[in-house]
Image (spheres, rainbow, N blue to C red):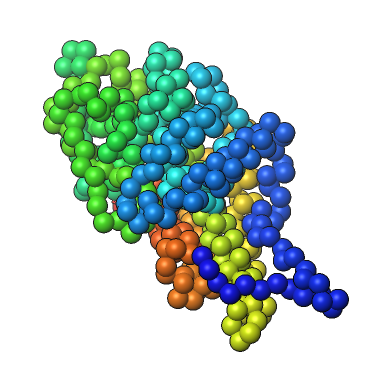
Length: 409
Ligand SMILES: Cc1cc2nc3c(=O)[nH]c(=O)nc-3n(C[C@H](O)[C@H](O)[C@H](O)COP(=O)(O)OP(=O)(O)OC[C@H]3O[C@@H](n4cnc5c(N)ncnc54)[C@H](O)[C@@H]3O)c2cc1C
């Protein structure tokens, strides 16, 4: 966007180039090996050249940019972190850095990918049978089939562990699903839904792979009027006597809500990466603006109070990067606990709210115009703060661990 521009002038009178915004201040990307770094760079180029130029338009229109899907598929990142079944594998650090890189340009695209690859494919990889993995993961890795993850309901959000109302009733080799799911990302247009429902026989939560486009009784209504992550299409799903074969029940490892929580353990700290990327995007746009915007005849970036805002933002970003990078190491070693994941999610999303509001403040009035980008990150941070378990729920998990007392009601 046009702003009055500034350059720093040397004593010689020659203009001195200003530093390029770089939110990877402690060089986390440099810790990847050559192959993984090359993949990260491919993602960066894709986001920079295909997504960044068009994303504000889609954000304003509440629409998903299907035009970028062919190039997205060519990245070969579907099922990143999952070994075998046509998936590319990769370290947890790469999985995280890719999510961060996507969100650095747009948190909706990172969320679309996180729901498909992390939540939907991750459920099948973690708690599906060998047969289910062979059937579903390869086409999902190629992104020929896109997935969603249906846990939240209109009347049950934070309380899904205890109060799911969607029911599953076994009739011979078939399960009959009834109920509603709300807020389900990708649901209005995707192909495969992972639906969590309560088995009426044993009262335990079980997971089902539903081919939503061809299953009678399955319908989705797109949710309207969101003020955050507007590019992600969220849906309210209604299931009326949906019949799903027993072969589609996530049978290997999904016997109770504990197994759903195992999936969320990985994806919650993944939100930590996404939200850190969201801060990075806001910071980099704000810094560039500070270098270019003139007031009182000088770039606002030369004012002490503006530099204070920028240093605080970079401190938040770096603290979050350190936290999620250590969580990735623990995940790679198979040691990441639900509690550690919860603390990462709560801390990084809370810091994101601070960072994006400082970035918005730095832009003055232009901070509330989508055209200057920061407003998009500012609004999107609100959804990251609440989804996949709110700040309060994460702190209740951490609080129970450190005190030994459960404060859950
Ligand atoms: C953009 C977006 C995308 C989403 N995508 C998906 C998706 O793909 N799939 C899916 O299944 N879900 C999805 N969700 C749902 C999301 O996970 C829920 O919104 C979230 O878990 C919170 O539930 P709720 O909105 O019903 O809030 P509620 O549970 O009603 O909570 C309202 C408030 O009460 C607080 N609260 C609740 N219980 C307690 C307690 N015991 N103690 C203290 N405070 C409490 C909460 O922290 C919150 O501040 C998405 C949500 C959003 C906004």
